[in-house]
Image 1 (cartoon, helix red, strand yellow):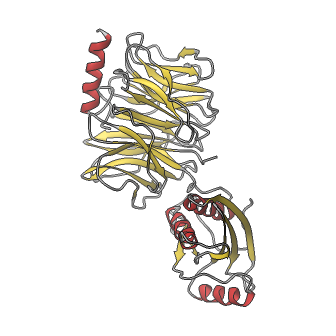
Image 2 (tube, rainbow, N blue to C red):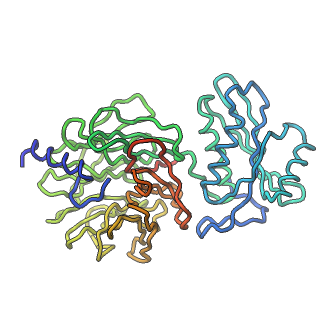
Image 3 (cartoon, one colour):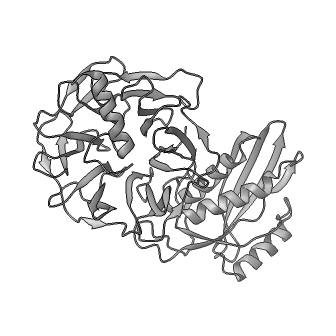
Length: 443
C-alpha cells in the first residue's frame, strides 16, 4: 500500500473512531487530630474542615482573590474525597487571637475537625498567601502547620490549588493532585485539536491550533511537554508540544505508516510507541535525546498501546496475537511477554503510578473501565455505564482517574475516585471531549 493510500485509510479509521480497526472510539503528616482519613478504602469517613475567606493583610484585593482562594481550595478538598468542607463566610481578622478563638469555637460546634486561617498580601502583580492549619478537636485549637505560597496575581487559582495540596499532605503524608492539568482532545470528527485545563476543568487553553486531526496526548514525566499523534502533515506522525514555553513543536517520529500511542518512560528518557513502518503495527522505544530506535515486539498480530510501569522495568501493551485484543506485560527489553487478561476485548492499558494496578477498557456491549493487578489478580470493574466509559488516565496519587464518557449524550471528560463514588464532569460547554491525559504535579 502506498503512503498516500495508507494515509487515506488511516484518516477514514480516525473518522470512524480510532487509528486501529479494533480500538474503541475515541512537610510531614499532621499529628494529634483525632480523625482518621481513609485514603485507600471506601472513603466513608471524611474530615470536616472550615475554610473561611482569606484575610487581606497587605495591598488592595481588587480582583477578589481572598474569596476565590477559599472557594477553590475548598472545592479541591471536596474533590479529593477526603474532606467535607464546612460552610464559611467572611474572613477571620488577622492578628486577633480572641476573634480567632471565637471563630474556631463556633466552627468546632458546627462539626468542623480542622480549620484554615488564610492570609493574603497583594504586592503589585504578585500574590502572597499564608495557610495556617488548626486542629479544632483539641481544646486549645492547636496550630498544626503553616506555610506560605507565592504566585502571579493573574493565577490565584494555582495558589489555591497549592494550598489545598498542602492540606492534603498534612493529613495523609502525600501531596494532593489539585496543582495538575488534564489534556484532552476537543472537536468534531475531522477537526480535532488538543487542549488542556486545570484538573477541575477551569482555565482551558489550546495546545494545538493546526486545523488538523490531533490525537492521543500524553504528558511527559516533568509535566512540561505533551507527546501526541497528528495528521498536520497529512500522515499520522508523532510530535511533542511545549504548552508552557515558546518552543516550536518537535517531530518525534514520522516513519511511513502509523506513528501512534506514545508513552513516556518514568524518567522521561524514552518514548514507547506503535509504528507500522516495517509492515505490521509493533512496539518500539525511542531514546528521545539521540533518536535511537529499538524494536520490542515481533509478532504477526497487532501490538500497540504500550504503557510503562512506574519502575521503568516493564510495559503493559495490547495485542491480538491470541485472537481478540487483550492486555499483555513484557519487560523493558521486549522479552518475558505474558498475557494478563483473557476472554474479552481489552484495550487502553494504563499502569497505576503506585504500580499496584493496571487500568484498562473492556468492551462487552458497551465500554467500561476495569483494573487488574500486574500479576493478573483481582480484576475488578470500575464503571458500569451509563453509556460508554473508556480511555482512563491516572492522577499522580493513584486514587483518581480521568476518563471519557458519553453518558450524557456527547463525549465529555469525567474524573472519579476508585471507591465507587459518582464521577464529576470536568469538561463543560459544547463540543466533544475525549482522550484525557492527567499530568504529573506541575513544577
